[in-house]
Image (tube, rainbow, N blue to C red; front, side):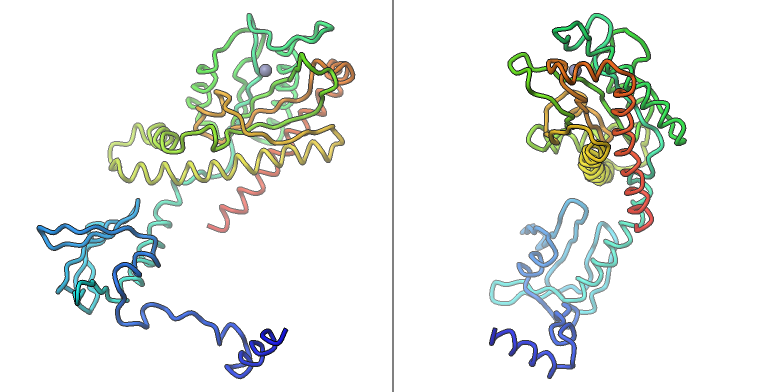
Length: 346
Ligand SMILES: [Zn+2]
């Protein structure tokens, strides 16, 4: 308590406002800083090129070349003047503080340049009724087939989304077989902004289990690096003017934005189901094919258990099927509002 009081009176003495008293010193106000500390502050790595006496600072979007004795640096190929030499003393390299200000400017410009590549508003939605044709999915002890329930809910969801103005596509529109790869390719071809897979669960060991669940591709089951590469490849396969390194940076940005959207969507759908009074379980990470290989944000909803007598009876009724579609719809609308807000803030 004493310490707190002392701090408060100190800050009052320093100008009446704590934030004024505690303002961090900007590096531009310091004339120079040691290389190691500079890299730490700016999240950069560094390496020496002994033959050229060059020092290279880098991360996945920057390559900065410096040379002791020179006041010019090259940043991603652009030459900038630091107005002060990079110096070398007693085995240590010192960098002019002005470099940090230049980096901040570069980063800002880059974000502006790239923001048009980051996913925009949600317009195209692919709904994927699980199974179909020779693959019935789960079958309840009373004969209800998963593929039929999935399709009905998917169709209700389809018309709700259409009325809201989305462009909506179904991976299957009847009782026929579509491979998992075919479903993912379908979404890629239509440049889907969202992929929603609809399934119905079953558990042969426990008839008591019931409830609504949402699955997403958690990091545990994804190889982030290959997903980023796949995203970059898919998005920019027809663009020969972008260099590969830039494609990969963009791929990473899109991937990160899509992960944010996926997580948001998964919890928004569960929340929406809860608000509608449905019996819900939880959000789970899973290695399902459609979650792993889709480029766009993707979730898989297990609407209920066919092995639970009570839930199976509900799942047969169109009223309950509509309610399930409404729950998913509510989550999608919330994601739409969220993305509109974040785009406006860019
Ligand atoms: Zn299924």
